[in-house]
Length: 357
Image (cartoon, rainbow, N blue to C red; front, side):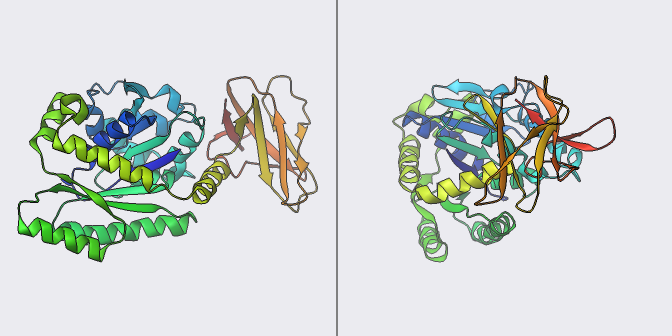
């Protein structure tokens, strides 16, 4: 599953338009696509005819541990699903202030999706660099930056690349960056010159560009994709070419596997073949057991087995659907699962990890 964040802190660059119609083009190409609206303005939802903001939305997905992606998404077109946005997202940064792993909440939820659920996740980001954008960048292995042909856009692109560099350093990962020239007017010498300068000054500029077109605005007004409005129009064909170029520019398989492994390592317990797999990296521990409020479990917990090659303790157990608090006991000391961002306080005031099956 490839995850692409469509991002630019500069407003008016057509970011949401690109997210909507790229998703539509990928779906028409036979790909299974999930579009996540992370913008409090919820324009991606509006652009697909979903402006009611009825919960659950992206807000509930980020705010509550027990809300999975499957409970939030809606199918808006064949092979195209949407996680609707909401204006209440504007307050999420204050609500999650000081909480551990708040920048990784979206990646945690996406990591729980079955691998075969979607081929692409496209994330429409807000026109700012805050908690919502950081969640998108941490979840994504690729970034698509739409820019218009202007000096301000080129300056903003340099600053945005610096932000992406911080994410790569902080979370020890590589994010592939694609730059899309959008709203291009090829009739002017200025636009053509800016296109040439863009390709000279910045790596990752796509060969495809999208022209300025009134048909795009008409599609937005009707709450449909450009393919629903006029699949033979010039912008529709340009988005088809854009989707094809991105399909051909897929990151190497090794890099995608490494990225997926990092996300999995951050996500705590994993469901696999009807079981739940628990893991803890503790190469110097003499013993590790798993205790929790699971029905029928022994009070002393379930012992984990150490892998002598990497010092990882593991076990797989059957757990019925539900929400459970648990912790590891490492050498006799109760310990929260360090790879699980979700937690709850128990009756003794201790923080236990939270598992939602």
